[in-house]
Image 1: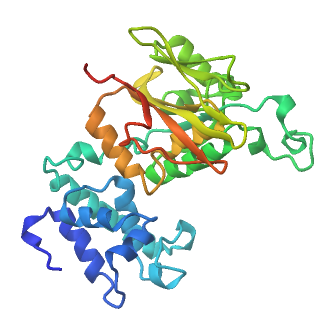
Image 2: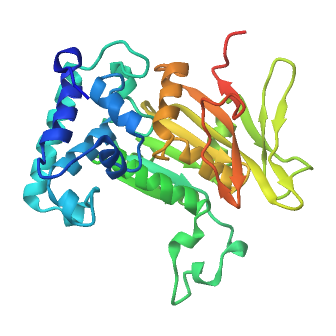
Image 3: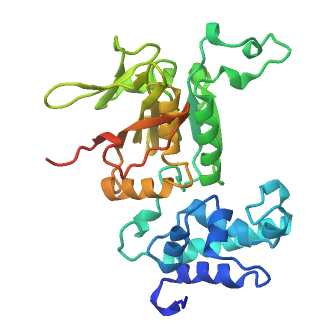
Length: 356
């Protein structure tokens, strides 16, 4: 397949050149590179190299990591070597290459194409300002903790006192990857009284609903949000989502089968300015049950769907400082299935609402 270097932006040309020329001893096909970068599709790599999609910061960082060393192929690869396995020289090379790619993206590749403008480079979980990021999770009630979650236990494991631990680990890892220059930490909502200014005045992520997360309770009580979580007699051990509508409030309930158990949860992703410092963001990620929370998280962390979902958010909401999506979270064999925002059946409600 021929490649017309004159018809694509400089960044796209550089990405193509890296793939075909950086390591001539290795045949780096689009399939090989897609797998190495975390299970992308070959069409995504092709879109990067044609300029029809501009890669976000985190993807350029992955490119820089992969092409910083030939050991990406020889040590269990092709794949991305973790930081602790990179030499100092390889880290320097990665930094240089990453800065080069960022510079090329800033000076080219900003054509007004769907999902590929300069604004398209913005990712929901990539903040780009090196401000502190705090992930606030709910506290598991004392009576629900296992023995080793007790600080008096010789085998005390503090993480077992966190609610929505699957979702927290998934999102914390992604936040660290997407914001390599930021101080990213997780906190329990029960520690709110001890948080310092940098914990509440940077980017805040509130994980889990009002049932166990005191921080989410605090925000939803004080902010006029179009969605809330309320008890419903049809649902045990969970709070359902209630959406304010012109014709009255509407509730969205999970689906439970007597034979299969939970087959569909409901998840919420809501972004707004941080009321403690409106220069930064506050994001609520919640669900009726834990798999709704995990599904809402995976909308923008799952390597196979996050870029499609990010493109939907950009096309739908642009640079709006406040937006939200309430989605169905299918549950298959006990596992949350990542929602696809482009499927209208999956989307239950959106804010701002579409014009009628």
